[in-house]
Length: 183
Image 1 (tube, rainbow, N blue to C red):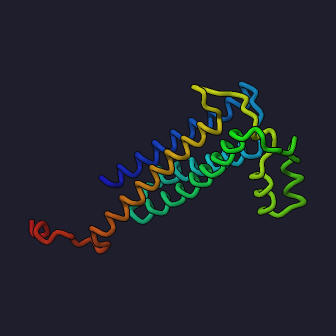
Image 2 (cartoon, one colour; image 1 turned 135 degrees about the vertical axis):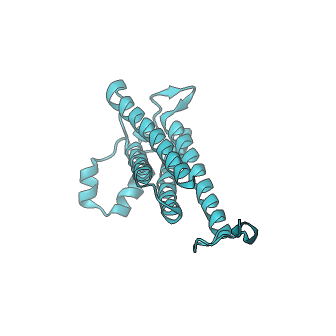
Image 3 (cartoon, one colour; image 1 turned 180 degrees about the vertical axis):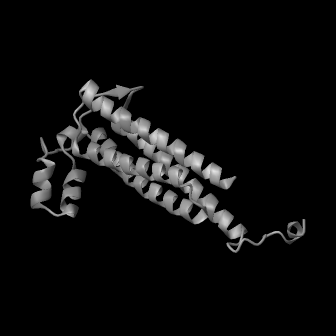
């Protein structure tokens, strides 16, 4: 039964991630919203999280594999949470002086190291601080932050549950309850 539960949770997380990813593409290509560098970083984190959940639901791992998949999912969702949180902070501080536009990503990668590119993206631009679309008075980065935070909570809960199970049952397959071993 734990295998079925693990597969179904990974599949539900995959479906949620795929819907969020599809929504982001819909907002960009059908509605016409322009993506800034931080939006692209959030989309990358979302795609990685969705891919990890898809691989885990297809693979159907055991306890150790589930732990590793949830750990990878947690890392992806934490990276997305941090990125979305930074963009929400940029949108909440209109007095901050930001550069008017960002250079092309290929130009950035050609002339800088990965760390410098990430640092420049986290500094933000005026495009990152502009709110162009809302739903229920929440901007796209705020919705993204809510999604990533929910997936972070799910991953932490599953990791803690797997750790609790690991400490209750031995890996050797022997029963941890001697009274039930004779039944």
